Length: 209
Image (cartoon, rainbow, N blue to C red):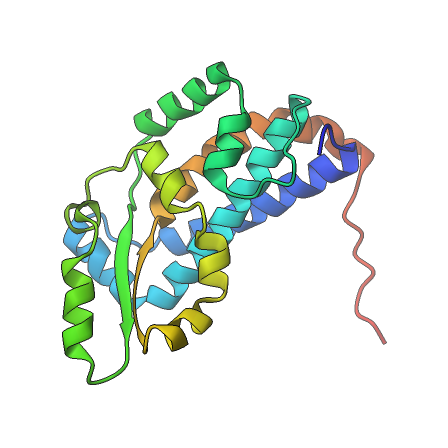
């Protein structure tokens, strides 16, 4: 994909922005304290899971729009680290610098799903949880991107993996870092999107009879 139509650019921007807004509504309810935030995530793991999938896809869209705007070729690339690597070095550095300077209220969460009565397997999964998810320490951008390389496909079909793994699986949900990253990308995309907006419209045809 080299270049993109005005309609495609604006549609993609609005689509990514919609996922961002949905996540923002969910993340606004998170407590500020780390332990309280982790407990809140634990009580709402299906929602954290769903928003992480959506934000991974939103970041893919945003990266592709940014790449297309630079007239670069994506070659059917989908994974976030591969998309990031297509950008020129100066763009990568600018995004990475903003990512590390931007504070995030919500971070990365570790979770697990286990068959009832499978405490031994669940305890083993917990012992192998990434250290950052236990301490709340911020993750570098390259770590977030590499962890999310396959997460969109993996988490969309997680029900299959549950069958293969005998009902006990570990997952790392980068909901906070992905939300922060996509927010940065949307800021880069917004000027051109708003420039295009007067030329296109979302048409509401009303209820079907």
